[in-house]
Image (cartoon, rainbow, N blue to C red; front, side, top):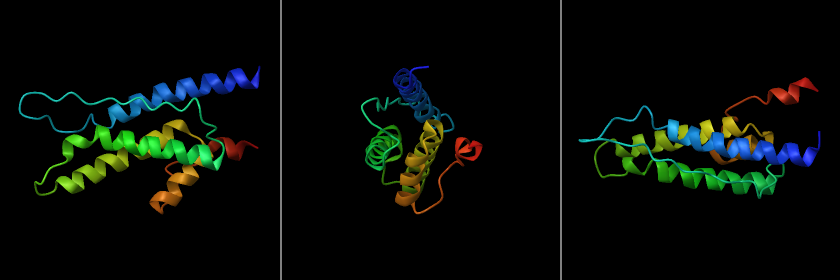
Length: 127
């Protein structure tokens, strides 16, 4: 198998999965008065080498921005809104990081959140 083809296919698959993950992170949100359609944001990263620290950092920032956009319905001055907004953003980011499944991206996540990565890279244990 050509490694370049495999990488491009993986990036396309990951970008598609990432979009679904961010949208699904809103599935548990309460409906507003009439109806609530979860926002979907596509995070593209085919232009990045997410196995490098720089590429992973850029992708993390894109995921964070998409999570803020998707979770924006929680922004308000009402009591508890900040907690719900933060929880939504945290869930969207950690789920997206897990879905992408790149060790370098998980390291960026851990450094930014000052916590452990949201997944254990299984493929690193296979070696």
